[in-house]
Length: 157
Image 1 (cartoon, rainbow, N blue to C red):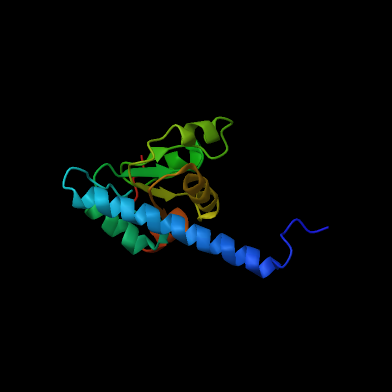
Image 2: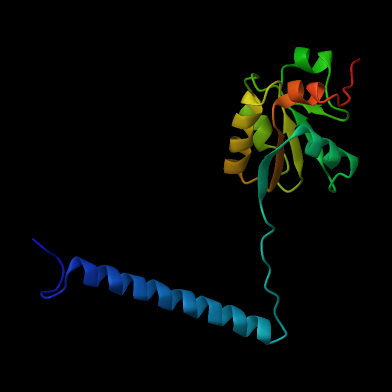
């Protein structure tokens, strides 16, 4: 049994829905233009989200001229971290029972340079950060292994 009025096909209903959505979009855009044109209002656009994998050279360049508030996040175990890490890195153990809660507690508005050993764990964390709404995450492709292979410096206590 069809719930569409007689003489209306599924294509007709889809077209009407599309026209309705278009009309709603036009109304929203017109309202934004009106507010912006009145001089009394400001239209704020959310910052662009950047979540990407970068090679060790690009990661190193990011560290040389860091964006404001950059956090270097190492998601390896404390033992791996103690064996050598990037300068200024903060260790957040991927295998810790509290990891998901600790990650969720981080400031989503500051940029992060993220790495692990080979980019397996950091790849998973990158996607977790994306789903949590982080706005700027740069993951080191190949992890600390690729970083060291590129001859880039490590802090070794």
